[in-house]
Image (tube, rainbow, N blue to C red):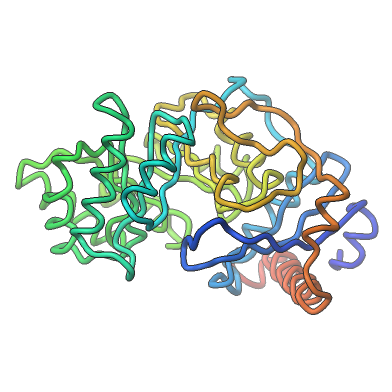
Length: 337
């Protein structure tokens, strides 16, 4: 079925959006995408701009699942979450963490705008805000070499790190890092994110013993049910994280976290607070360190308020059409998924 035919037959609404971030995050200042309403509810299609080709297909499959199939039955009613700390000054980071009210914080490090000293200062401020019982994890987004990662983790471990997310870019580097850390007597777990969602071979993480924890993101990995299947195959503890979506997209991540048989770590799903606004009148935001598992619907006024220019809307609709064609070709076996 063509994209146009699918939309006419299935989606009752489709809207593009553009919402500014409160602060620069992941190299962007504005989040854009599409939200669609189908017979089962709302879904979101908002791949980052650095995704292209077959990488886009998972984002569409996740949206289609939410719109047409809904979500598996939950096994919990609340999902414990972490606050996410961008690259900001230490005093601002401390205030941000205190305002979030979560017991765990994930701190971005290894950004071009920071160095080890400024990262350490920000981490120390976050630790002070959380206290000794709080949990601090860091995310380097694959920016370090193995040598750089060993140096950084050695320097930061006095903070008390719960784990380090994607310290190096490749799965092979993560495996090498784990060996180096073990030999140095440094017991800090490694979590794999990009090595799972962008490598094309997530199970290689297990084959190479490259990580202790798997970070799963619903949109890039193709939906809640695909993530549940992947989690079972990997056999690693799972952290569910967001792709910086609106609450309509976050609902997809909440559905995964709510359906996992075990959820030993707080999830990275309290990211709607990074947006200056949302598309629902009651956003999915942590209260007492957890987000309630509940349905959300787009608000007509907010959809209108955050509608982008006609040019950006056309661009996103064309991106969706291209992705749908790739998905259809993949289903026919003519290209990879």
